[in-house]
Length: 276
Ligand code: GLU
Image 1 (cartoon, rainbow, N blue to C red):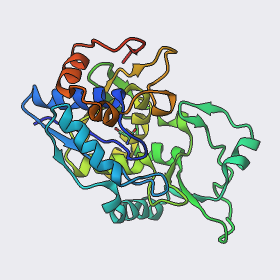
Image 2: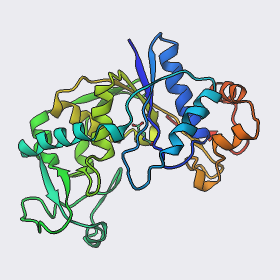
Image 3: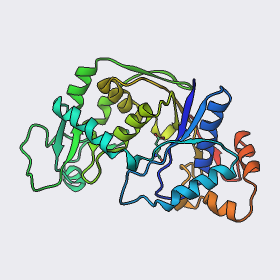
């Protein structure tokens, strides 16, 4: 059975881009007789605003969607710790005390997700007084996992290439998991078979596929949908003037009509659909 999900982070209100993402994930499951899950990704303690999760539920209801809600990330911290510990025991993680500034000063190359960590802390004794993140030793991890592929419903089969990201952070200094670790573990724990999300996270899937291999998790299929773009061709964002769904809702706009229009890709003026 198809199980898809919408996994918003409550660090800002949902906007039209989120509405489109939720509708795509919902409809992909519903049209195939599957389940559609809502998972609140409230792992970022400093930026998460718990009251937003309720707004999200009201927004989705307003759009006419039905979902099953699974446990929010903030209740799963133990599972992230245990999983990180396991990789640490296997020698696949190493502590890193570098700050962003220190990394920038080394002028490392740029990967698909920002600066590629040059491996400064790998194999070095770190100062135990400084806060440390845990990074994946990408070379060792890839050697252990062997060659992998993954399938996006729209883009087809992909050769898994996580090396381009370098040694990514799996445990952040202030949180027990990074997005990559938490999302991968949660999708497996929630039985997600079709990971549906925006094309901006297409590359992150290389990392997630590697983590699935390391933890021997079931491998879903992915569906990276096109993003809604503003008049400058940039991803919609609240801070760039995209109206919050909660504002539209409170203004009395018709959510069901909006959902229908998004389904038909009839977009408000100034907004376009990018490439998947
Ligand atoms: N929580 C992520 C976000 O709001 C979504 C991650 C995902 O769908 O994998 O961007």
